[in-house]
Image 1 (tube, rainbow, N blue to C red):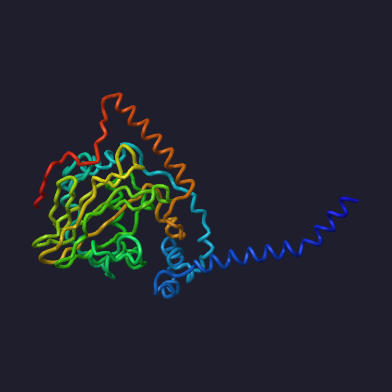
Image 2: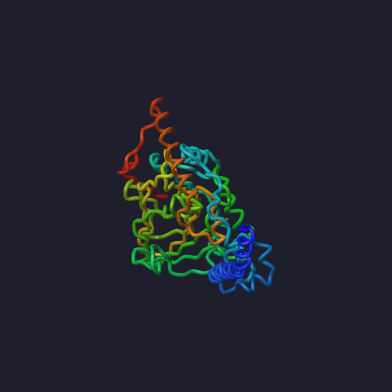
Length: 352
């Protein structure tokens, strides 16, 4: 009857379905294998030294081929961590840092927030960052394509290799920074970036928020910019929209946010800034960026820093919440949104 005919047809098609399944699996394995590669020349050596198990957060993503962790690249990149802060959270973090003893905290701008911690690092910590973090300088990148642009001529050394990542003094520094912020899990931070500016080098006006809001890690929130050297002439950090200029001094940290305090899903263009040309001496500094969500896990898993559907949904909810927060604060007479033209600092030259 009909049932026996259907069974016969199924049996006749089984080899074809098996072939299709095998082909699909081969394509998937081939895709993962083609994407699976080591990001560093020394991955095999590190793997032989046991770094795959000792430092999985870094090795499993950056040395996937040597660690045999290619399967982890199929992680669900739409699985988002929690947002680390919401409306008003930037003010809370800045006020917390200003209240910490021993750092000489000063307000440079309140809307948008820019603060200076004059004595965040001591001389031994400054020397450590240059020694440990400055292990491999190369031309700084920016933008698309090759990444080399005339607007940025400095050199960069990333603390993204085991020797730097696992250094106890470097770990202590990163915990010191996240502890000062108070609302930033370590997983939400990028690798520390050490910079070197030689005479004539600079980074023209730019903004640090370059991560899609709807990506797994969300936007960059805080920039923790640490000065590591005295510069006899030039090398200032300048915020053109705020009329604010800070001269470099070793041990000081400038902290600002790249998004709005009243809406963490909205970039704040007022914190655009530049590293002015060094005219005499050599400038060393370090960037430490934090994200709204977990950065390290999707980064190690090889997730693309592009929008994902779950990120889109999270952003829509965040924007709705921000509107409600502003409406409630406005009704209480406690909030007035600043414009995008400038902050409240006027023109200020910070000389130390």
